Image 1 (cartoon, rainbow, N blue to C red):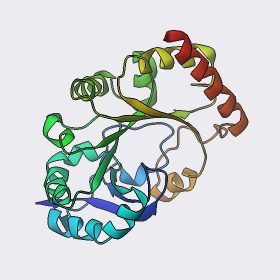
Image 2 (cartoon, helix red, strand yellow):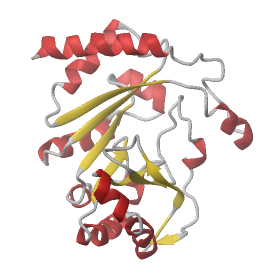
Image 3 (cartoon, rainbow, N blue to C red):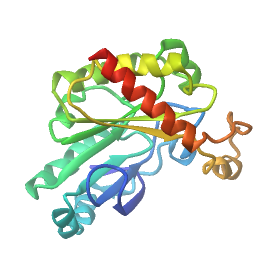
Image 4 (cartoon, rainbow, N blue to C red):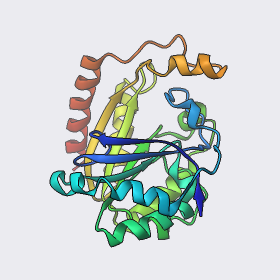
Length: 239
């Protein structure tokens, strides 16, 4: 079985615990206005077999074991290549490698088998309301909610990731709704606020794609940190 791999990063430090190999797969249904990887939207050429990819990952196993790391499948949206990832995971599990999935939860369905191999889900929350999600991503929130329910049913360990876009998420109303949603998700081990940045702007120019947030300013890091503290208070209030 062949997969479409955009790139592979070794020694990743922010996509799960420990030192990790991060595999970026191509293809994504969403068109998030703040996306900084628009080059991964389209499904690329099928360029690697499951065995070839597994071999590249296993090569870094000595670093995983010393630093409690592993592999993270990211994108794009890895759920668009679930069958391929399953084949890779079958090989990696024989090597007892920790496997994380960085996803927005919008793929092609039938997620249970894939999730049975996943040790940690890095769940990207795009927006918490139906109107906001549609406006931000171009799709309805239903597919994300379906995936979330499967994760909850299977009691998967979850790290929540929320990009904070100024003028969109940096307000009390949004933070309250986010806290309410997170409180419904069991087994959440970590919650990260990621300030919106402008590092991907040049990619839109290079690809000839309209950048909907061209004139949007980056999120202030200090304000993002203060919002996070308010969020933690709200989480506590919901307890």
